[in-house]
Length: 417
Ligand code: AMP
Ligand code: MG
Image (cartoon, rainbow, N blue to C red; front, side, top):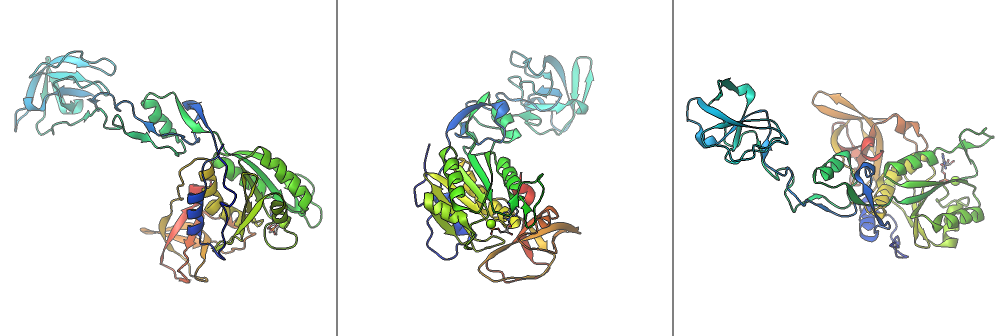
């Protein structure tokens, strides 16, 4: 298993832009997972470990796209209908078995191999059949309704690139190329814990001053949505020794540790000291809102990402940063989530130099999609996420956003599986 170098997260600067943070992940992080072979039926959502190069053409043979009559286009008369005798029959799985006779048509069905000597198919709706002959309308283009061998995937080309998360269609394509199994990376094993003396387990009675743990189940679902195998290390108290014990245990047999809370600079932030005791810790002060400093560290060779405790900040930093880190560790190609241009339906002022993510829903206004801001935006207001459809990104340069300006929309559906 590959290990990360000790200083892969080192960053000396004061404030790191989101773009630079992602570039650092792209440069410095490599996959830490081994390759296993999976039957196609179990490979959905797994990350492809090697390119799938087509060892055959797809489709393997030229074939008809419709039910109708196949013939050589050169046999058509120009400017009038043509009548040709029907000399044979080709159905899917039942080729004609010999070249078509010149000057005749062959009855053909969808998926049947194109008989040698034919190049065009007229669909049956456009033909009139009369006593063993077919009347073909004028004006059909040469090659109409014929699928070429290899028109989908040509032999020797990369059909699926290493690093893809296998979708249902990817599995179909691999099967069409004759594969029954694929090399994939084994899932990233992620240890997950929440921290905080005030954080308690949902389902238990809530003592005064306590809150229920929102982050753990949310982050577990986000991690599983990215294909990770999550181990639940529960809620750990704000005590350095207890945290250190848990982190040491987690680092023994995981590829990544994810924590929430306890990583800002307050005196109750014990995660930070526990990590420093066991391994190395780097803070990335990201120029991002919501989201406070994100802690990146290593215990032995195992990376750790410490997300903020506020649930909205935890979610946004997960989506923007942790997701990219996880993709790289898991062997996936780093694919930035797609954003879509929409119109701002609100005015917004902010400090330049920082990227801000605003929770919005979309409203259609004639041809335009307009982003409507959720009215409340505290980092602890988790209902602002459940009541919104995504985030708009107000970039570093912008200080004054006015209604009607174009803005990038990141739908939650892109990043939250
Ligand atoms: P911290 O980062 O530990 O200073 O926490 C920041 C805020 O997030 C505090 O109000 C915490 O109570 C809250 N918080 C921390 N962890 C969780 C959690 N697992 N679920 C919900 N809220 C949390
Ligand atoms: Mg805390």
